[in-house]
Amino acid sequence: MDKIVINGGFPLNGEIAISGAKNSAIKLMAVSLLTDQPVELPNMPRLRDTRFMGQLLAHLGVEVEEGPGPKMTLHAKELSGTEAPYDLVRKMRASFNVLGPLLAREHKARVSLPGGCAIGARPVDLHLKAFEQLGAKIELEKGYVVASAKGGLKGADITFPFISVGATEHTILAAVLADGETTLNNCAREPEIVDLVECLNAMGAKIFGAGRSEIKIEGVSSLSGVSHSVVPDRIEAGTYALAAATAGGSVRLTNIRSDHLGSLWPLIAQAGCKVSLDETTVLIERGGGRPKAVDVETQAYPGFPTDLQAQFMGLMCLADGVSIIRENIFENRFMHCPELVRMGADITVKGREAIVRGVKELYGAPVMATDLRASASLINCALAAKGETHIGRVYHLDRGFEHIEIKLGQCGARIERMPDDE
Ligand SMILES: CC(=O)N[C@H]1[C@@H](OP(=O)(O)OP(=O)(O)OC[C@H]2O[C@@H](n3ccc(=O)[nH]c3=O)[C@H](O)[C@@H]2O)O[C@H](CO)[C@@H](O)[C@@H]1O
Ligand SMILES: C=C(OP(=O)(O)O)C(=O)O
Image (cartoon, rainbow, N blue to C red; front, side):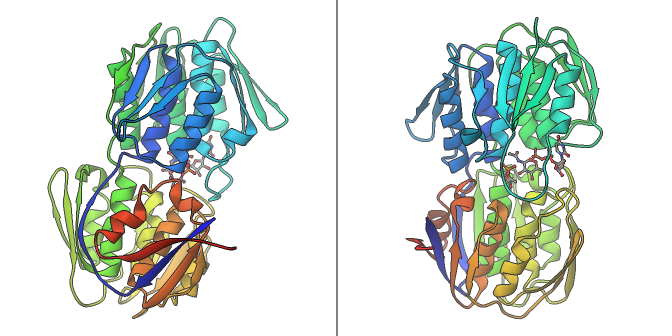
């Protein structure tokens, strides 16, 4: 296992190109199960999660070809099976998304219950309820979901009891080939859902309303192949914007969709940074002086994303004042707090809220990455901290950040990956 070693206390200066979004890419890979034609994704991020998804799809009979460059081509001419085993699904939550497409195409599937970041209980009841409403029979058997839909899925009127990104996407992936019309109410509105729908519609699907609360799907009998560019990763962009705000300096991010981070820019500005935006780039500048304390709470899109909560807390650790950070999406997403405290932060967690009393300085320390975005907040704070920080268990980080040492290194970060003898 590797660790990241950062010699911090130096500002960042330079430019970083943002990759395709992990949280879109893995769902777009699952789209390949819905057609016997090739699905080409020209700007795939190379991540542990995309590699795991590739392994699972190959197990199901999909030909997965990487390259040239960042391109990935997936071709599910014929499927060799409909079972997604525990060993391939446990490593990543979104791999559960093969269930819907398998049900849609093969009318049956046996898929292990998913794994993913340990940030809460994360049940999949909404997904399964939606599939039942589409006419599937669902049984739970020794850690597996066994699903069947004799004669195929049927369109239905479905209202999600609360907003779920995964359940919205997964139901779309199943209903697209169902017989008749499906209406989904109380949908998530994340840009990754719009990206998924744009890809499916380019393949001949008839889906209306993505990005809104109500989505209508007119089922089609088949989908064609496609070449579709993955939407830029708003969480990667937000993480590097917050890295510049935390460590200081001046960093330009390119290949972004600035409108996808509408909830973040005003908060970074309130914290005392200059934010200069156009449609596809942002320049973040933070001169001398401490950041200002700002309160934040996580919400479904277009609210402030839970996937940037830990990184925003990293910035607030150095603020002049007290910041209250409220996590509304996941019940256990404060595992970075004790690790940040090792670096000198002053944080008290009370239920869903963290009270962050800003300190003048953080210092380097040995810390442990506990989940993907928590790892990113440790990196950001280590860049600002005086001295050397060793961040263990970086496999979490590799799930979602492409070439992080290279990208930050380009901006002058003193960051190295080393073998860890943990
Ligand atoms: C791979 C991927 O895209 N992951 C993202 C996705 O996760 P994911 O799709 O898992 O997140 P959801 O939006 O589904 O989860 C929101 C909340 O609903 C709960 N829930 C969800 C489904 C269900 O059937 N039952 C249930 O109770 C979850 O435990 C959580 O508390 O959206 C999250 C919220 O923006 C992000 O943090 C994750 O990075
Ligand atoms: C929580 C995340 O991923 P996953 O849903 O795959 O665990 C994330 O991307 O921050």
